Length: 428
Image (cartoon, rainbow, N blue to C red; front, side, top):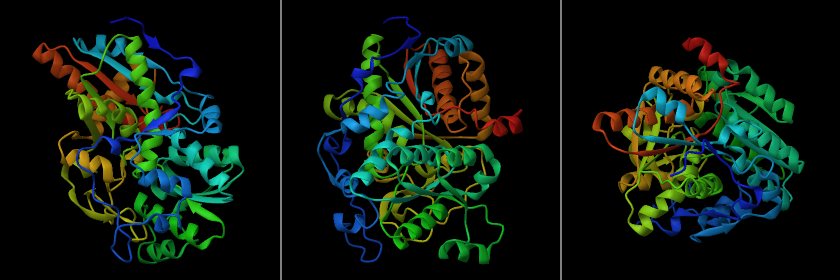
């Protein structure tokens, strides 16, 4: 084990392929269903909404998928991201555990979301698509898609959950600066949005509602497709680049995690850090523990029901076999808006069902306590979403201290909180 604080890689070490965990899962998840026929979803069904190459990635069982060189070139703007030994946090906790974090906050948009925004914009561009729609909760995904669309000359409409639109004014300004068109959802520009506002003019919105509006606009706009920042298989696939980098960096550190931790909204950053390491459990019989940290007010993996459910409120998306709180679930208006999605997604839900992943739910007060401690110890103010991963890591570090047990904890710092300071102002 080396004592290096920050472990970096040269840019020529950026992975050339993404890792597809479906290739190694001994028990496959149930298929997505067509929302109208309730039959297994076909590629043709999905191509109405998504770029063809993304649909291919959604269905493939190939273990590794090549990353296009044009995508890798853009990723080199900020990748590889550093792996950091959290020695300051270790000292503050007086723990025998060794703690590492993958620092995704160094990307231009301050989060991991650009890892999939760039390839999604690329695949739409090469298909000749000129317009895209999407939703965003806290704004990280909308920001990432806005700059990715600028790279490829694509028009973008973002439906941002209204409560976040009002609470996080700088997020919408970031999107507008990058060229995205941002709408507070529910809106008056879609039929579904108008119906919501008719029944509830003060509705603060939800990710499910925003998805419905984005899907409706995509279906009604010529040469337009929809893009998603989490949940679906191709999105999780793109994020594995960060876990594959972390594997190489842990080798340089001459260390190996016993537990891997990430916050959980729809699964993108969690899959990114966890899936490449989970491969060791699936193929080599290792016993790494994987912890998904979700908010206490939106505990779909912890307390949701495993069933087929829509990914949106209007019922326009495919039916997904997943742990869910219901597609009409309206969570509390917590600051970690990116974690307020009602469902756990197809792959992660199956892995939870089969016992490979342990979900934990954490109250908001504890997460901000953890975020403040981390900021003081490591000098980085984390995003409210990321504080859930930090809080879960602190729990495990203190548990190791109590038991006198040596642990190696790896978590994903999915983003910084410098545009979320209003959240910290409320906490303080």
